[in-house]
Amino acid sequence: MTRALQLNWKGYYDYTEINVQKFAPTKAGVYKISFEQQNGKLLVRYVGQTDNLDRRLKEHLDIENEQNEYLRERLRKYRASFSFAEISTQSDRDCAEKALYDYYEPLCNNADAIPDMEPLNINFT
Image (cartoon, helix red, strand yellow):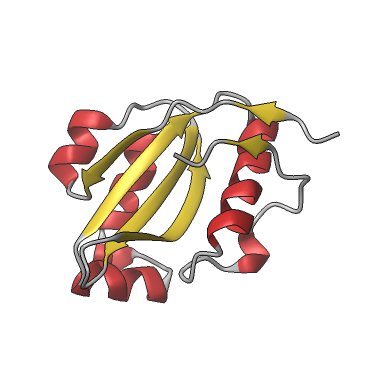
């Protein structure tokens, strides 16, 4: 039986350093980066996890040093938003990240970097 975890999602905030500083805690969690489409809808294009949401989200915004070329190009070209949920334990973050990846099939993620775990049954919004 798949474990369930109810996440308390925060966001979607415009993905700027000011908003990361204002809203993202220095706590562990999972996050989604979405890009605005021509019709105004947001599509999740990247998911991740970290032990420090504030630091990791700021790292992605450092476009010149962003290692993921797909994410880097989208951050240069499109309006982005971020959302996050705090998760304290590493195993729950691994399973939640796997669930997010399976659900959204984000174009900017490298499938090999996603934990090979049984996904948690989580809420996605």
